[in-house]
Length: 196
Image (tube, rainbow, N blue to C red; front, top):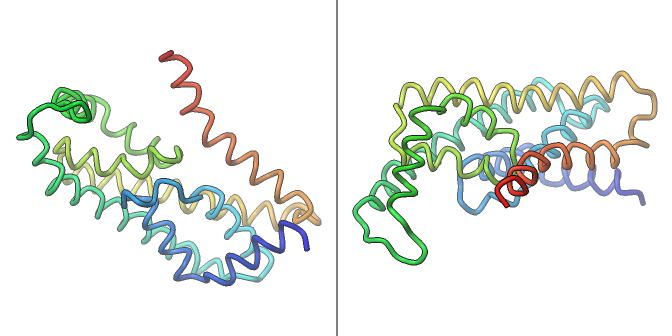
């Protein structure tokens, strides 16, 4: 059994509810930072091109999961995270970092929330930090809708159309998924290397 069939079996086993749960958790729950959002969206789109999933169900489902996950993350950050401003500094927590985050969101909020959708780990914390930084709620909602559309619809359709366009693309699925992973992780790695 090849990796492709294992991946297909995993996604068909978890089904639409599992896909929704993973995208939702990775978009705004602290426990979701390790989940494979980019590769899941692309692979699910590919499976839709093979008739295993339905694209008209998949696309809105993933979009709603991403929007609601970011929204829950924002509310959590706003309601719980704001209390961090009243805490005293410790070896783990420094109030100045929250103030810096708030200033950064005030200055670069739009590009931060949109770009974060395409960066693993950062994607999970972006909405929470936006809530902590007290980003304007209407602005957050607008950016949430836009970024969720670019991320979910873009990757679902990329997988779908690639699956339709290339004969026997399933033979190349594993390298394509690997490439998507490398491309999504590379900006974070480069940023860390620059800081060092």
